[in-house]
Image (tube, rainbow, N blue to C red; front, side, top):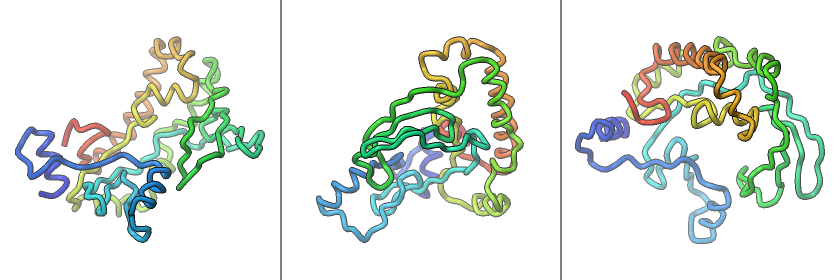
Length: 219
């Protein structure tokens, strides 16, 4: 069975040759340990998000549609010493990050979130232009070529959700978990989110037969 056939059969509770095998990611620190335990240094283990031939994970792909703020904030470094860096990221969040233990681009430490760009309703209105669903920058270059390749694929194709796990983390990033309740209860917030998400998904799903929208629900 191809990875796509296998995945769809599992979603439909049909017989398969084996269950689909995939993994989200691996910490760089884990790769370093594997190298000391015998992993050859000259093999391509893949990025895990798209599968790994070496480890036997199924091929998987994602529609590279940008669902984050576009454009984002300017990245600004406010302070930096030997151990940490204080900055405002492209998401507008002020954070302090540890510089220790970074390997293959991965940090083993969670950032300290200090301040957020969304505090008032006027802040919310100011952020809305950064979520223009019709911005050309949200779609990859040579879109038609991507669609042509995907039409002949034998692997699952996924469309991401905002914030990685839906709307709540996306809003949490802007405002902070403790101060979310008033915003989550406001219909205008949800309506604005729908106005942003629906046009992007309609355009994408009209052109591409996405197998799954982040979670295995539909062909």
